[in-house]
Amino acid sequence: MNKIINIFSLILFIIFAFFAIGSIYDLGFSVYEVNDIPNIQAIVYGISALFLLLGLIRIKRRLDGKKDIRNFKQFVFAVPIAKNQINLSTLLISIELLFGFFFLFILLLIRNLDDALLTLPLLIIVSVLLLESLVYLIIFRSKRKAFKIGVSPKFVAYFDREMHLYYYKGLKRVEVYQNMLNFRYKKDLNLFLNLDVIPEEQKENFFNNLNAVLDTEVVFIDDSYHQYVKSLTNQEA
Image 1 (cartoon, rainbow, N blue to C red):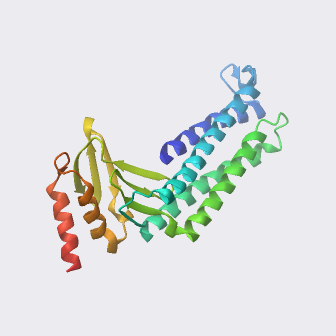
Image 2 (cartoon, rainbow, N blue to C red; image 1 turned 180 degrees about the horizontal axis):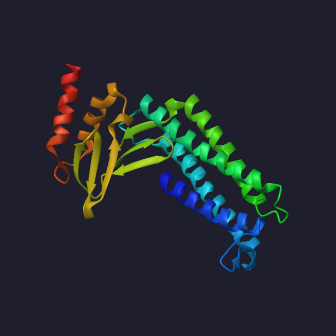
Image 3 (cartoon, helix red, strand yellow; image 1 turned 135 degrees about the vertical axis):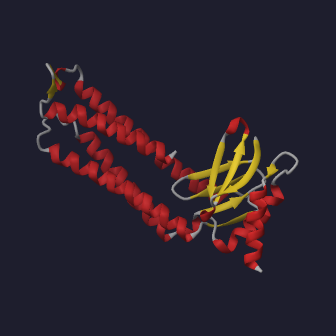
């Protein structure tokens, strides 16, 4: 979901730049000019509103994920996510911030020529969203033990930049493929859990608890899964 929000945010910013910069600099193509488009201000403000909506969706998912992972009472197993996953998520959040500051820089560049205040709403929106992301990154690094992976009787879940859920309902098969735990569902839906999310010293406990809640009469356990669990046991020995 986070990736989808980033893609749509980029698309919206490109569309915004086309209308806003085209209007401010009186640009055109062929015999048409951007300023000739009716209600250009309403269009640009509407795009800014959509950008805000995507940002609010991201914030809501973060808040809901943190609340859910803290309040899940049905976990039979829960540990903080691995340090490597914390570092990877930190890198991804930092990249998002870099793109955000790039957007902000572009907006500031054209702000002085923007007599119609076309860029002002998005300038404020991007600034607020960047501030929220910076605060989230600080919390993510300073309270990383609050970001967990857990096994419950109904699903596997972990929370880093957002909540990731892997339900057992509709599950047909589990297998391990290239250090990924693949949950294969009906209609050929596959959800992958990167096993690096789980701390190395907790992987055996994770699989023991997962084995205890999976209904093996419904879910087929692939041999790759058994081999991986066996390798963990051998490492422990």
